Length: 291
Image (cartoon, rainbow, N blue to C red; front, side, top):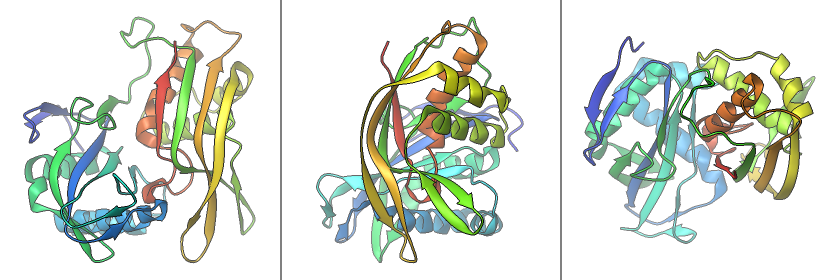
């Protein structure tokens, strides 16, 4: 556990504080060592490569992450770049969000200080790590976020309208006995409920389960433009929605406590991702305040 702030410097010369109850999104700039087809299903390959790197850093931690049935405190993305196929020498990107302080300290330090020594291997293709970004200045999808309760005097911008872009297929698992069903309506309650529960699992204080009812009463969907895609996990397929939805607070003041939590959890979604199989690239999202 990280007991106090630590400071290190990333390859871009950015001073970075590693602190308890702080979550991180790292974007790795990669160079392909061969031909690799980029597709949404590649998240499961990235997940395997992620665990392989963790195994090199800490074999015991890797085994725990691989076998732990609890909700995972990290997410991975599929590989992305220009076009649908990488050729040798092409540039690509991958994103890891780390919500666990113990994992963050080991993983973030290793990649910031020694990233060039690591390789990701996907389907037999090696991708060298060329650069690591941890701040939005380096890459728009990188960042640092503190698991802090929102305060009325906070300098964080207030907003009542949020656009959530579902960058990779997104669905919420709903088990009925031994059957797996998937909720894809993208209702606000599902999004904010997921963010709240993961926030709590990561160690943040929260308004509790009663907040979910408040969200349902005080959030309207102004617009939704989504389409369904299926992700093949070889043994089964999962439906998920990509596109965007615009959500707006209604019948409340943007400075009241639950509204501040609504804004805070919306910001957190960038790090938590949303829904099912976020460790394998599903549920990647972005959030843009619109007011």
